[in-house]
Amino acid sequence: MPESNAAAKKRMFKQNRANGIGDESGRLPSRVKAEAKMSSCTLCKSELKITKTNTELIAHASSKHNSTLEECFPGAAAIAAELAAASAKKGGAGGAGGSSDGMSKAERKKKQAAGMDDLLSAGLSAGKKKGGKR
Image (cartoon, rainbow, N blue to C red; front, side, top):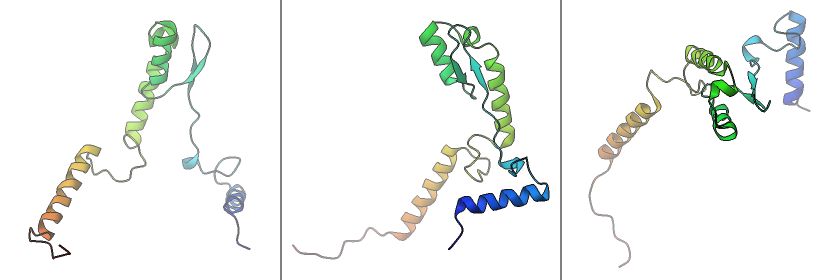
């Protein structure tokens, strides 16, 4: 009977630990995600995740307390700037999209549409359709 995916992972982790590769559980450092940075509100003590844009933190501060981000979550803007800089250094927005060739998503879409227009205009003629029942 073939080995399941979970069993294959366990075997790989065990082999990594035996070879001294990776962390204590055998995971490779490039595949281990960093822990999410959390911050708690100084007014109501609710804990929220700090992201690059801090959308949830800003919404919480303005809707719940009618205050600014810095009043509710001191230092969150600096941490968000660090996350954005690390993301830009790592490979830009998204990261999992593959090769971007230095173009934005809109530019890639426009180029692809232009290429499709060229293909369509080269391959189609404006002749009459062949008959059917009338």
